[in-house]
Image 1 (spheres, helix red, strand yellow):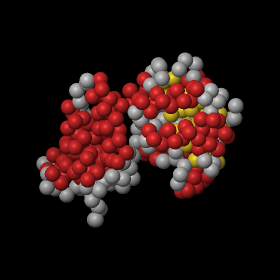
Image 2 (cartoon, rainbow, N blue to C red):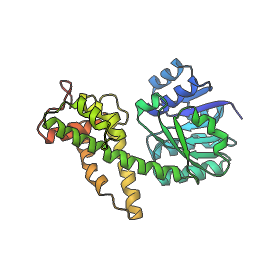
Image 3 (cartoon, rainbow, N blue to C red):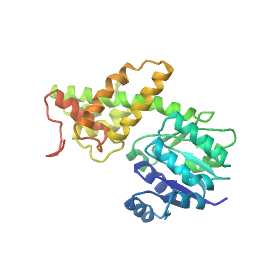
Length: 299
């Protein structure tokens, strides 16, 4: 088996995975459709490949970090003929149907696959401060545990393949709701005349704290949404997947249903490529106040 670790999809998360693996002593070969992403990989010591197929040919372990079900399907078309004997670590947040299809295709081609969605923002990923939810067929995870440890803070092995994606969908439900709740609370704080930096610090140390308050609260307080840890356009895809899965199971999601229109409004107001902290700007507009720290011309 080849010793290189392949990374297909060098976006915010994939590029961080590749960088951390290089930093931790792994040989990394990667591919992305964007030339600048390839250049960044080479700048940190990774090796560029000309296609997803070339990555699979050069790697014993292939990591995918992709934006959609369709993108994963396209990548599998390329790597399938070369995946025999290798392990695919699929880190994207996608539908259970897409993950199940990927499992069947990889196993049929003689490979193995790990369902490994990540929890954390792009900024956290850059620091290796993400959690991996991991699930796979028996005996697969030990083959790649050291690789997963090379780009995460911690991992949770959750059993049968697909369980990790179920956990990630639930985690993102909490992210969606807590992010809007943070924005709602800070808009009220601004309306009340409180200093937002102080509010983030004080509230973050109390019973009402959340990871979203800690991570995105400062972004909201300063009106800085231009370096997305997760942009609104991509996160809307996640919200749709969660909603469909909950509906399929007959599980009520009233808070998610209340939050979804706020993200849709952010999208409509031109925040598609901005961080989801931009929901603060939506609620601030509804409150007839100017988002604190907002740069001239934004929105």
